[in-house]
Image (cartoon, rainbow, N blue to C red; front, side):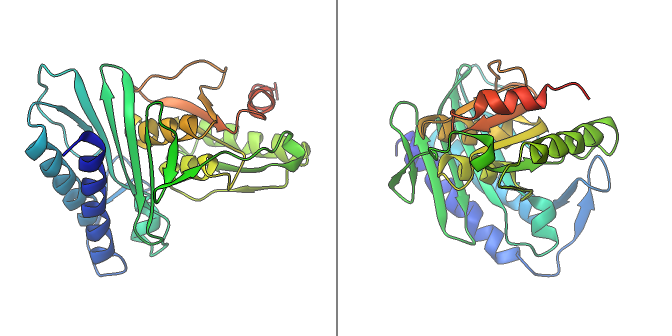
Length: 260
């Protein structure tokens, strides 16, 4: 099997596990805070995804949310969020997914994001465009903030970062945007930018497994993903992420950097 086929197979395995546990009586544990949750579905999904990848590519590295894996000498790294949107999942809200990316050195080669509840599989390979269930997708042609539907996310912080995000919300509404959504699964948020369902997205702090696959999917759909200052973002550390259809990107950057 080639890389993309393995990623899709692993994503669908995770989706099956998500569906098995969704809206059942499962244990929910806290990680770094009472807002940061983990369930058996997260853990079982990660094991299934890693097992599938390691079966085909045992020498490859794994960077995943729930467990740490022994580093190898390989130049390939799989970046995995086994269940993005755990808080939604744990509360019975059907907005969550699995996200899988493969990077060669520091460049993402492919990304697969699967929403089992809608049976929507978003995918992209570098230089080959972005797909939804095998059909080509593109970002929206919206050219101004005034005609834009935006998406944001709130990190687990309840201090200065939350205050800054809320200030940004206010600034965007002053620009008379069409509306704002907070869906709770950053990987899906990025897919919705890629598929033209919204024009822009920003979130204060995302881990590589939250955005690695979605970043490539947005870019292959014709969009743009940067940091808050418009800079390139790497896949080895947490980052402030701004994603858009490209046409409103500079407008978003300007609002996000306005002085209070």
